[in-house]
Image 1 (tube, rainbow, N blue to C red):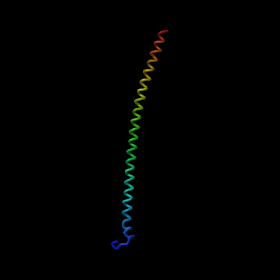
Image 2 (cartoon, rainbow, N blue to C red):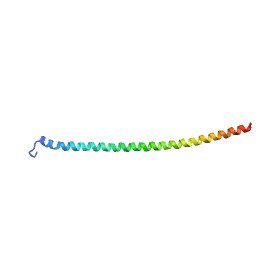
Image 3 (tube, rainbow, N blue to C red):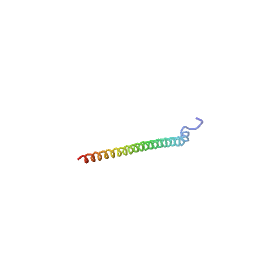
Image 4 (cartoon, rainbow, N blue to C red):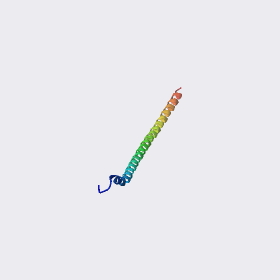
Length: 83
């Protein structure tokens, strides 16, 4: 092959194969890291939305409990006045 031994040709291409293989590996790792970060952000957003929903529900339950308490106090007053 062009008067050069195969071993010499392989030796000439080996550093390029190693460099390109390493670049491919690092590129793949970078893409996976970006995907992982995006997935983590999506989880944080989902958890934040869920926590806001829980806070709203807790606030609504507190208001309902306050109304029930006022109703009980009113009923207790009515029963006390009847006696």
